[in-house]
Image (tube, rainbow, N blue to C red):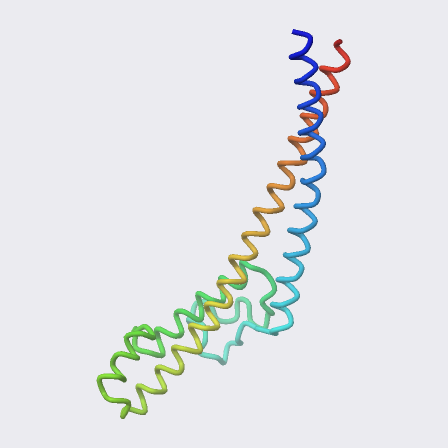
Length: 167
């Protein structure tokens, strides 16, 4: 029984120490990644259009006018605005649908060609913003896991210390 208790003490303290080391590293790395995402979004200077722009539905105009997109949730919200605008500009058609129509017209329709360019550019910007949002969400997971590891590690170190003191 004494051997088992000693083993439990060593394992608890060892695992706890490893978690207490890894947890803060995850928190710091997640925080740095989040700061890098924010800096990249800020450097792109993507601003929510003003009231005079048709880029937002009537109910959304002015609410966030001029605000620069800096966070993952803001990037996702603006990506949704772009998605609606692309559908509006293409008559509710996706890039692939417009491309298929242009191919069927053998490339001779300037209006379809412009709609395809608009859809392509809009979807690329939308995809980039959604990637920023996904990366932001991943940093939330990393930070949360770091906090969880730190707390669990502290509990395991305390358990190991309690087991060692009862010998």
